[in-house]
Length: 144
Image: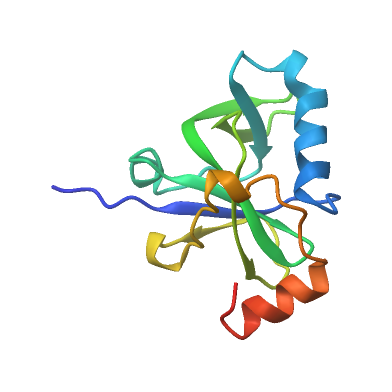
């Protein structure tokens, strides 16, 4: 059986920019294995095998998908309250993507690769970001 790769989509709660999201992850690095980032979520994805076929976690920041991280592993964790949770083990590298609007949602969602925004070229990764309202307006009319 051929497995199809699938991505995850998640809100970066509290982040106002990709830089803000990166800064938070940098502050957490002492708690994580080298080269990895960990994000704990309540639900364990049922499509684990498809995610581990090369999927990424796409981050929604202020209503726009703006970046992603490759998913390296999914591990069950318990934070001491008896509730099993899923640790999304991510590559520490944050890859910027074209802006794509997304409405708020809770938890995470699956996202088909064909619906995923393209990565920005490396040369544009450090460009000054567009103001969020302008980036969203351009994405909504297909000019991301």
